[in-house]
Image (cartoon, rainbow, N blue to C red):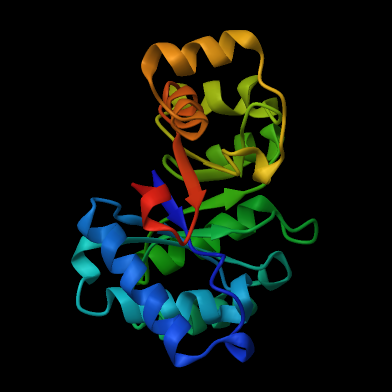
Length: 231
């Protein structure tokens, strides 16, 4: 399970108390064994990265950081600026996973991967990938790279990735990360079969959903600021 930190809010709406509480929560998450954090330059205008950076400042080796750059910054020079700004906000000299938030229709996949490989050779990123991608885009990405990360929506309502992307990732040892595993907070009526499973395994709906996703070797990205929910 990864912790999505896009609920940080904007810096203009923050104060020292909320900032302290969020840093403490991230410390709790690390102490509980959560070591993968998902953020992006878009979240809170970069404030999400800034708060996460403060939280992991003295625990960098314990944290795996996944961040994403805006699709409009997919050209080499803009991507370089995005990466450098993210590194500065995070207070680190490398990002573990660096992804394109969305594929840019203006930049060929081949050019995108070439630039990401340069950043990897420079030691600024450990691995790279693509978010919100179609199967065709994942295939093109794969033709240019042996290993990368795919981050797409996947849950009981949005199961399109099951058809081709997830099998492709598993077959080629690629990492698939699922955002919105809890249906983006939508309230749906579960079938009796699911209710029976909840009773059988004495678990919550959230735990059952995470288990259902994990069966395909998928990492779920959960969003919460409540430690009891995270636990």
